Length: 240
Ligand code: PRT
Ligand code: MG
Image (cartoon, rainbow, N blue to C red; front, side, top):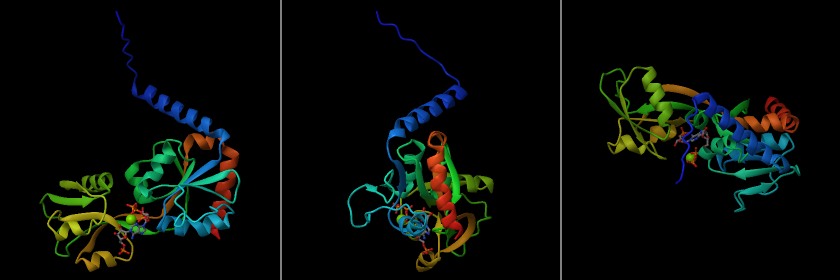
């Protein structure tokens, strides 16, 4: 006869177990190179001058190479090329020790297991509610909101006491109101020209956005001196 043991653990035990797992993963990573997760495109282009000034940059161009792990000018550091929205996940779970990510992605993901020591002050934009110019946000109607930032949108409208229906999209949010899929969108806006080209306007500000350097909390404990030294060099580059 088989015996099953059911073990009930409370929330603080669960958090301690999750931290233990992260520390174990970070310890397992001690023998390997330090990993920095970056996305291609805007973040990569704007991060590189800072990282070059800090003396740590990839020796291959990710736009020309199909490699997802790139060696760097520092023998004990490598770069991981991942999708922008995946950067916090890689860093949170110890697949990478550090990462560069937009505050928009971070607000959406949540900061569990992550430190956010440096505002790199790059890829500046604003997270906004947008829609047609005649929209009255204070009317009592239930708006439909298309966005990839579903958690941010939910929080924002709840804070304003507005009832909304959130529709999850993965891109081209500006299209949704044009075809009647939604009344509003929540998206990042830089120059505003994409909104304008589609007959939309910014209606409400949610948050100013810049890119942040994030660090796995357990990696920071275990490899404190190495990571701090790199953070100091990057902070210096941001200040210059
Ligand atoms: O493309 P993918 O879905 O893989 O990821 P991503 O879109 O998150 O990555 P990417 O590289 O486009 O953006 C990375 C980060 O750059 C974002 O997380 C933001 O923090 C930041 N950033 C800064 C922007 C913009 N400016 C920006 N303008 N991200 C996106 N846009 C898009 C916006 O979504 C809209 O479609 O550009 C359009 C608006 O631009 P304007 O200038 O017309 O207002
Ligand atoms: Mg994009």
